[in-house]
Image 1 (cartoon, rainbow, N blue to C red):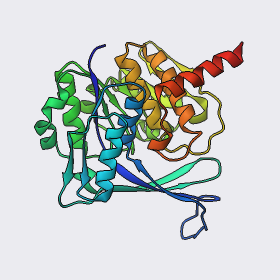
Image 2: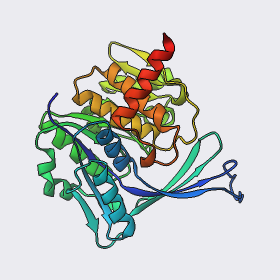
Image 3: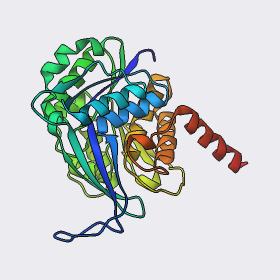
Length: 306
C-alpha cells in the first residue's frame, strides 16, 4: 500500500510519578521518582509509527507555551511531519497525571487543554495532510465531532481508518461504519458493547458492523476478530517496568504494517513486538522503539526458539 499515515489526535505532556501502589480514594501515598515525558495518545501513536519507518503526518493542537513547543519539537525529532500541529493562543497544552506501580501498571488523569479545541475547521484548513493518505489513525482524546469528520474525509479518499477508542465513550454506528480497524482494550470493549465478557462484547460489535476488531489483552496479546472468525495472537513475554504507551506502540506499529502491505494478523504481530519492547522502558514516547530495535528483539526471540 502506497501513501503515508496521518494521525489526528492529542498531544499531552505526561507528569509521571512512581508509587509503591495506587492510592485509594482520599488517601495520600508517598511516591518515588518523578519525570516529565512527551505524551498524548495521538502524539504517541504518531511517534511510534515514525520510529518504525512510517511516513507520518499529524494534525493536532497544543498551547502557546513551553510544553507545546517541546511536544512539537519532540515529534519532529522523531520524524513526524508537524506542520499541521497548531498552537492555541487561549488554552494551555494538555497534561496527563500518571501514577505507575512497581509492576508497571498505571492510572492516568488527563486535562485536555488545547486538545479540546481541535475542531473540524482545522481539518479543512489542513486538508493537504489528507492527500496521498493510506492509513488514518484516530483516538478519542479530542472532540468526537472532529474524529467523525476526519474518518469521513479519509474514507472519501479511499484510505483505511484505524480507531483506538480511548478514553472509552459510546460510539454510534455512523462512525463505526467509517472504521476499518477498531482497537479497544477489554474495558473499552465492555463500554462500547455493553457486555461484560469478551466473547459477547466481540459478537455485539461485529453485529453492529465493525469490519476488523483487535482487542488488546495486555500480557495475553491481542484478539483479532472479523466476520470470518477470531484468534488470539500471543504477546511476547518480557519483564514490564512501565506499561504507559504500550497500546500506542501497538497501534502505531499496526498502522505501519498495514501501509507495508502486511495482513492484519502479521501487522498485529509487529504491534505486539513494539509493545513488548516499550514496556521494558519508562515513559511514553521515550519508551517507543525504532524499527531496528524491534527487528533485533524479534531476531533474539527466533534465535532463542531454535
